[in-house]
Amino acid sequence: MRRPVISTNLAISADGKISSSPPRPSGWTSSADYQRLLDLRKTADAILIGRGTLEADRMTMVVPNRSPQPLRCVVSHSGNFDFQHPVFQRPGGHIHLLVTGAATTASSSAAGYTVHHMSLLGFLEKLATQYHVARLHCEGGGQLIKALAALDVIDEFHATLAGHTLFGGLKSATPTGIPAEYLPSSLEFKLRELRPIPESGECFLTYQRSR
Ligand SMILES: NC(=O)c1ccc[n+]([C@@H]2O[C@H](COP(=O)([O-])OP(=O)(O)OC[C@H]3O[C@@H](n4cnc5c(N)ncnc54)[C@H](OP(=O)(O)O)[C@@H]3O)[C@@H](O)[C@H]2O)c1
Image (cartoon, rainbow, N blue to C red; front, side, top):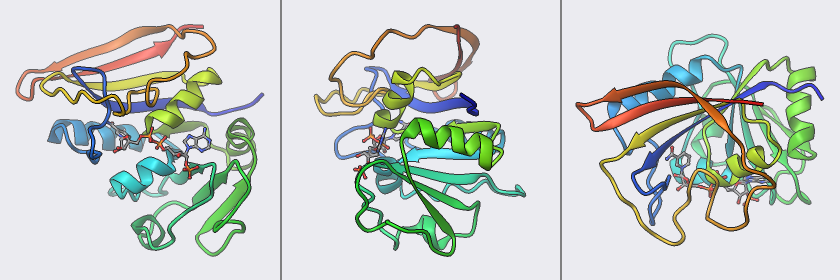
C-alpha cells in the first residue's frame, strides 16, 4: 500500500499524559515547544488531527509565512463537525474531513472542504496517491495516534518531555489515548535526537521507527 511518511508530535507531562482534565490546549508547555510545533508543521504536505483535538485546541492548522499551506485533515467517526469552528473560517490549506462512520452533519463536501467516507488506512492511501502527500504530520490526539500505531504507520515520533508538570488523572489522555487495550503489538523506535532545553526544564526527543 502506498502511504505518506507519517510523523507525530506531542508534549508529554512527567507522568506520561498529554492533557489534564479539563483539557489543556496546545501551547501549555513553552514558547520553544510552540516554535518546534511550527517547525515540524513546515516539513509537512498535510497535517492530521482527531476531531477531539480540533475541538479542545481550537486549532486552525496554519503555518505562518508558508506557501502553499499544508492540507488540513481532521478524522472523525461521528462526522459531527462544528462548521462555526475557526478552522472553517481561517484561510489555509484545503480541509479534508475523514468520516469513518455513518455521516451526520458532514455528509457532503462544500466550498473549502472535502468529506471522505472511508477507513483511516484508505484515507492515508488516498492522500498519497490522489493528493500527492509525501509527508503527513499528525498533531494528536492520543486516540488518533493509537489508531495510527495499531496500523503501524508511524515513522517518526516527536515528543516534548515536559518533566516540570504532573497531570495525574485516570481519564487524562496519554500519547495512545486513555489507557485501555494494548496495541496489537509493541512498536520499537530508535532515538534520533535528544535536545535538553534547561531554561524551560523540557527536552525535545525524536524517535525513528525501527522495522
Ligand atoms: N500534549 C499535546 O501535545 C497534545 C496534542 C494533541 C491533543 N492534545 C490534547 O489531547 C486531548 C484530546 O485527546 P483525544 O485522544 O481525545 O483526541 P483525538 O484523537 O484528537 O480525538 C478523539 C476524537 O477524534 C476522532 N478520532 C480519533 N481517532 C479516530 C479514528 N481512528 N477513526 C475515527 N475517528 C477518530 C473521534 O471523533 P468523533 O467523536 O467525531 O467520532 C474521536 O472521538 C485534548 O485535551 C487535547 O488538548 C494534547
